[in-house]
Image (cartoon, rainbow, N blue to C red; front, side, top):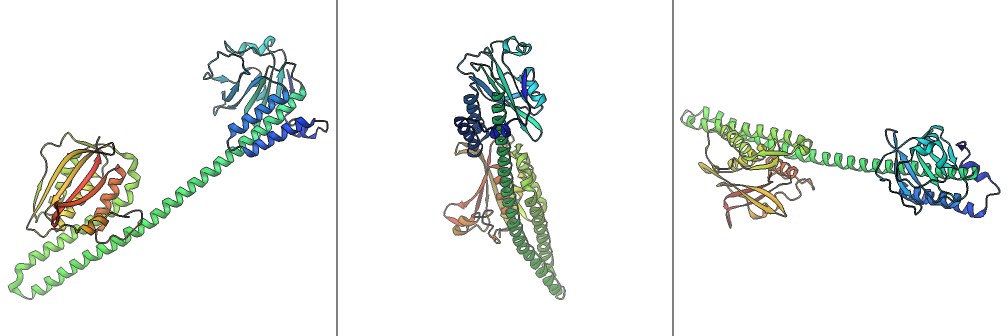
Length: 432
């Protein structure tokens, strides 16, 4: 076995004054490949081909050391036109002559390989190797890969080893540059994602603050007005019958404030649960929401009609599904001037854009939503960070939760052509 020291590579080759012009030209092509190619595999292939040209080798490969250091992971293999029946997917353990190159971090060669002690490590079906030369890819004091050359017509020489060592050094430099570029690219991408994330968080926090401030001020004003009216009526004994009505108004506003705070809390954590989607039972979450609003509006005469047979319907969602239904029901009750509040829930299945959805409709007899406002109510809600004060936090919460499911919400009139007869909130959720 012959070998050369690691430092007898590129530096020694460049210092040779007698190096023929054609070899200088080939070396310059290899250096250019390091700078020119955007991927390591492309640069390594160009350097390998130049190594074959300069040494006279007919076959070979370049491989990188696996993460656990136990085997070579072949980047590419050139059999030189010879038939090789060895499965290229088989592991290439670090043993034999290439183990010597890894161990010593030196270029090594042997010119009568089929009679050497290392021939025992060749797998069955491997091509005949007249001679071999291994040059390590050394990077920052470690060997991280290897270039193998074989089947030169004549014997390999120490000069061939110097050439191979120099070119493997260039391959290692190319790998380092490629890794640095990948690291920089990944860092830039992560920075961009972080910037977008924090920018969105900043805008959303301002949006939530604006809507919360508007809604909570409105709640406090309503409570203050009711307190003032109660104080006035306490001075007029004949009008005490209205005190219960004002007390009911205050309780409703307190419930509204509680819902508002809960929605703000939900909005702040929804994004953390995007990956926790699973198969959930629709009726369970729908009934939970109905029970909640009935307790919250116990003094209202609520007639909520739900289909009898929906126990076997499942959707892709998470624990926030109940909040979707609660907010829609809250909206239907809050914006309703009728003594008897009617809400009819319909459930069906549809297909849209090759996706199967469960369609849940909430038809109410409330005040309704004018057509123009209906068109724009969700437009730019998150992307443009608009101040949707008239809509409130509730429907913002609904819209954001459904977006994480791959679902959506639509608003139509309960009676086509007449928005004053109430609304139909339509929720689409992917079917499980």
